[in-house]
Length: 380
Image 1 (tube, rainbow, N blue to C red):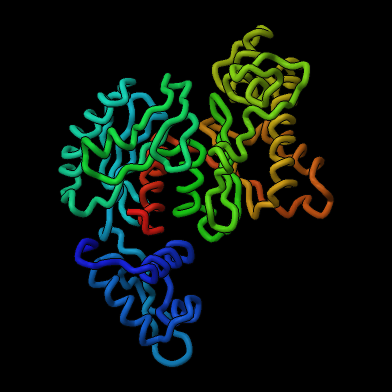
Image 2 (image 1 turned 30 degrees about the horizontal axis):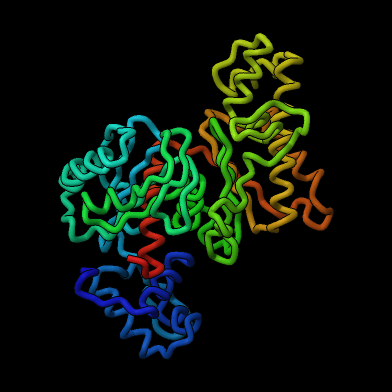
């Protein structure tokens, strides 16, 4: 398996190319990577023997049929732990991003105790899938909060009440698996890059719209972190100078206007009976001027923030992720209209805006994808 092959930089280059491009012939690999067909044949044979690649089908082009090579799903596995949900979800994910087993675990708020919980659950997770630990290449943990550039320490997580927590070290000590920690929005972006609609995009931005608002950005195939790990976070961009106080200490942040918790708090303060965004959408559709006003304000604020991302980064795509049962009402309509109205005319309409609902398992897949991403880049 993987342990029997000492991977070179070229091996990793091949794996990354196929991960991004999908099933590919040896000739295409040789041409794109700049190697002779003979050299590529030898390298891919080594990856096939290590079960990291497999032949999926053949294509008929000029000359004889060519076999398509793809990542082998059972060649390597990765564990993802989502601390976004409660209870936490732990999943074993194959090399193509599919869950093969999962367990729910206690979301223990003592970091060292949590590492023990993860360690105790690992044999159960592997046993359910019948997978030996030797095939597990790494583990990712996703949290809400700010994570350092090395993906090792949680600088601050308000949700979990953690500050300066070396969680990767604790989990590694307990499991002996290479462990990487990542912020929730960045986790979703990595997963989208490896397994989702952004698989073939070099630059894109992802927005997470939940109780809070997060953002992550891939620029030229790299997750852009900035000098201090906080690049592109839009939740605390000032939208209303005379707005409400924010938990960050400022006033008028986007979080106070367009996050789900802010929208619902404002709705209840206005006397609306609403537990979800859809409840407010229904009230707006029935003619409630209060609901219409709240959705217009929130949608405009989020759309304005996204338009600034388009102006600054010029991404190939924006992905807006959410947990709502529907995302096709007034809020989304106003968001789209505001984006189009606030970008330069030459950029209007050229950046696709995708929306995707995420579930608990998406966070676990995302956490595992952080480890997968590290593996593909030779960091494991």
